[in-house]
Image (cartoon, rainbow, N blue to C red; front, side, top):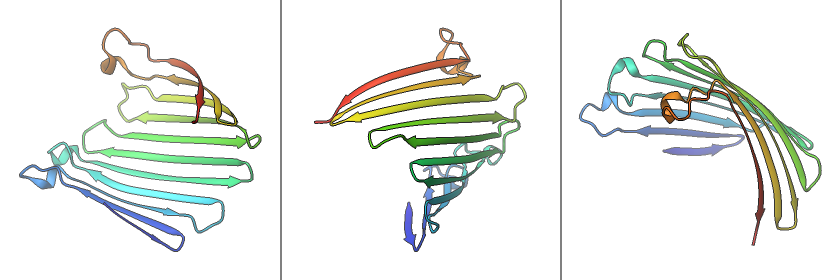
Length: 178
């Protein structure tokens, strides 16, 4: 792994060897850059190839691009990912955005949405929405989140006992710092 910072930019590079006798099919290579030369704006992008499946047709080329802009107490972010697989009907595209706002020094709220699209026509797109809030008083923080995910496609991952593809969750958290 390599990282270096220049004036207004940070560069990241990585190569991971999988360890088998045919290293051309079990390694991964990534390159990324973060640009923060413009005040309150952060741009980032990364490219990489994962050859972890030991076959040339199963290579996955990953692309990530995003931006984050802060104006006063508000921050807005957006990210786009693409996984282009050598395997037929295995490509994925991900788009997400969020906004957060610090209502005061002690309280903040945020909202975000994402969509994961699959090339395979048999797999429905996954859509998620979340909202959160937190309040800090001294060493105590009270936080809450509400998330909704449609078409979660958990049937194979969780077994026959949990096949609900739409999930609504919430959490309330009280934490203390000592």
